[in-house]
Image (cartoon, rainbow, N blue to C red; front, side, top):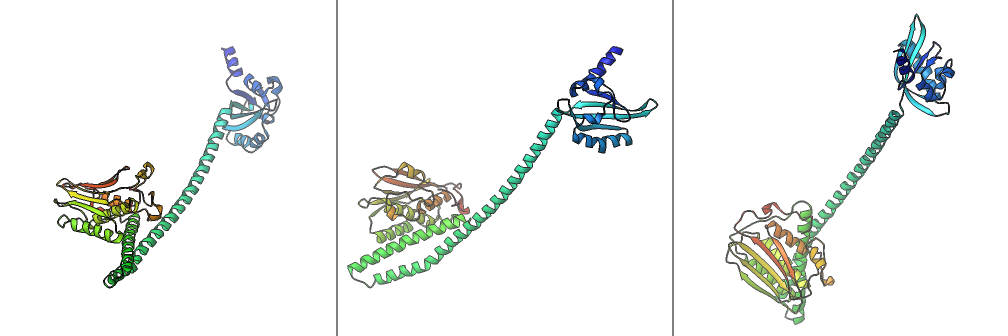
Length: 391
């Protein structure tokens, strides 16, 4: 049993030592001797603090020794031993002081702590990195919030300006239109008649542009497309009025086919605006030597409007972006407007619970608007349609 006890002391998985009252080694085990690279006999008589680093010696004088004197023990004191070759060995030590009859001795147990120190350093580094990342994230979020507020304020200002501008343009435009109609009753010169027809066409086109701009601005500001549905009033008269205005304003041939026997629960003014935008697109991009055809029909199940024109077909690339706001991918750039007409038309279609489909080939280009009838589940109803995105 005694040999086993000696073996346990000498080869324990920790360094063991006994120090006298002056802190000098009385005995050590083989484990501690192997760690510091000094034989046990050579360590006897040497001061324990001589094996410590400079920081460890300061800690010994300011904490370790005073605590042993006052409390008689210390636990998990972190210090560094310096081996004979200069290698530093992080350790934790526990010590108890016994000032009994056998003399004033201190028993010390020393445990390697390299892995623990490495883990602590990694943990501290991770915390520092986390704090740094959090600080950067907070700064980034603050900058982003500031930028977002500036963009919102700028966007709101821009859209309010557009809305105010659109309203202010209506008054002089109405005056020009009234003046042109007044002159039309008095002039007899063929040239004057042609000029007045061009003026009325420009007024009509300008009025459509203003309507589109106002609808788009209203949608971006949160109002959206709102509907005033009415299934009792006939739809054909207002569609014919749109066609007559465009005919007189442009001099182009617009053929019509109406079969509106079944009532249509819709916003007549918005449907007229949709048809005007589709016809305006056909007048701009269609072949001038071929007629434009407007057909409108209604049954108990569906209401359908189509506008057909000849000319160069729409390219696949343009087809993908056709209903996006401000997209002007037509074949006659000199005649393009703001690029809102088809976008507004698509939003009116969505507000009614329908959609606009496009077919384009060398034979013809056809825009077809279709909404189901006889059901309450139609689009966004009177709640409005957001105009902020694409059609």
